Each structure stands twice: as structure tokens, then as C-alpha cells.
Length: 408
Image (cartoon, rainbow, N blue to C red; front, top):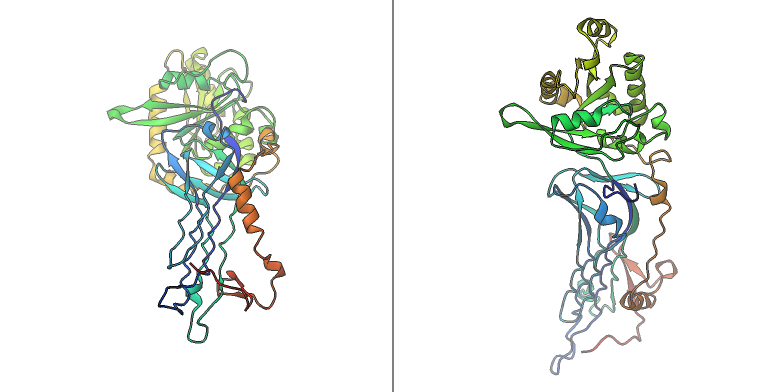
């Protein structure tokens, strides 16, 4: 997967901007000896915003953009001059992107619609200037608020593709062949297991210029929910499907048993998948005569609609599209399928090469200078009685009485 252009799992380091410090300036003019405090507020730090883009289908751009930093807010100045807000950073992602905390695996947010914006990290608030603290009893406040610090977080972006129908089956069950027969997609087809190495999407045309999207994922084997094979890594893509199409070849030893194995693996991965509408397709049925089909139909689960199909001869494909369309447009199916409850990332659902990725970042000279400037402020843990805080817990530093205020 390292050489593929389809990237559905990436780890990045994000940092919002820190707020600018408020000014402790006092107004001075030739004929105004006691002009009073007029220090302006600092600007807020920039946000990290995720935006859905329907024209993107992979997280590949973020694989080469591991560090995303927003701009810092500027400090306030005299004359109640407010500092400039830091620049926001808008990160475009494919629709269906889910965000997790890289350290804890906790679910944070998701982007599902084109143009949808989600504020991933909030920029720090700017500090208040000293003119906010003047009063009848405190006419020369010699203090102002520093800006709120930036928020830095390592996050994992996981792409879960949006499709109406998801194909589920063992390797060489005919999933890619069916997708190529129903749509214009041209997935790789061969006679060996795991030919499909990455998910494929195809648009299936239906009557009256209607259509629906079908997704094909690598084959699932027994034990996939525990990390065996390739299916586990791509099972996330069928979590968003409205209908699951189970495919079992007609030459299988026990069709019902294979169906139960597939169903068990999906339940182990995410129990919520059991609420989705299911359809069973018996592929490669051109090898069967009508008598065998009748015998096989008697052994199939009664609670799941089944269709005998053959992608080579075209047998049953029209009937299959009718069944799928009825399931997709069924209001009862939509109401029975709740919103996805994204499970936290655990050891089975992580990608090792991404989790072990080390962020190597060399700060610029400007960032080093800003860091040196921040060191001049007193550490809040060391502040004593001369330090006050407002109702929001937003601290400011009090100057000594003999300190001389800024004069411009």
C-alpha cells in the first residue's frame, strides 16, 4: 500500500495559533499628561479547519503534509489598536473523513458533506489590553493579559468511503467482475486471491437516468476482524453503506456457512453493521442448472433476499439491480440504519507504519524568536499574590509599582 495513490489512513501533527498579548500602553501627549491606559487587545490565534471536498477521493495530499500550523495572533498596541488575528488553515479532505486522537484513539469529529467545515483545533484568544481594567479606583492599571497558548495535537485521519452498496465476500467470489459488469469501473481481475488491493468505486446506471454507487473492498477471510488478510483494514469503508451485498460463489462447499462466516466477521468488527439491509448474491451461477438452483435456494437463509447471478453471461443482473434499488430507497431501511457510532482506534484497527511515524520538524528563526519572547513571561505556576485572574480563568501579569509603563 505504500506505493499506491489510494491513502485512507494518515497521521499528522496540527497546531493552532496562539493568541497575541494585550498591550500595557499609556496615552501620552504634550498637553495631556494623564491620558490614561489605552493598550489594545491581542489578536486571536488561527484555527485549524477541516473542509469536505467531493472532488477528492484519497488522503494522499496529507501524506506529504505532515505538519499543519496556523498563524499566531499579533500583540496589541497603543491607542487601543487591536492586534491582527492569526491566519486560519483550511485543510481539504474527502467526504467521509473521520478524525481520531493519535495518542488515545478517541473519536473527535467527521466530515461527511461537500463544503462542510469542522473546526478541529481552536486558536487561542487574544489577551485584553490594560484599558479594559481601568476604573474609578484603578486609574492606571499596569497589567494586561497574555494571549492563550496554542493547542498542539497529533491526529489520525481515516477515510470511510461513501457508497450506497458495499460488496462483501471471500477472495475470488467475483466482486470485481460484478463491479466491472454493472459499472464503468475497471478493477484488476485475476484468478488468484486478493487481486483487489484497495477499494474500488463504481456508478451503476439504473432506469430513468437514476444511479447508485457500489463499493468493492478486498476479500474477507475467516479471522479478518483479528487482523488476518487485507479485509480488516478496508472494512471501515462499508460502515457508511446503506446496503450490504454478500457474494458467495456457486461452487462453494457450503454457501450458507460462508455467509455466516462473513456475517460474523462484520459483527466482530462493528456490531452496528448488523442493522444494515443485507442481500445475498450467488455468483458464477452459469455453472448451475435450474434444478440445482432450486435445491440450493432451499438451504439459503430465509431472512435474506437472494439472487442467482453471473457477471459473465449477464444472468440475474437486472433482477439484482432491482433488488438493490428497492433496498436503497426503502424508507424503513433508512430509518432502521442509525448514524455510525465510530469505535475508538485500538491495536487491531491501527496502521503500524503510520503510528510509528516520527514528526521531524525544524523550527524557523521567527518561531525561535517568538519562543524566546514567551520565556520572558512569568510561568503561571510561579505567580504569587500579585497575579489576578478574570472569571474565565484567563490570567494576566501585574507589574511592580516602580515599573515604568510604555511611553510613545
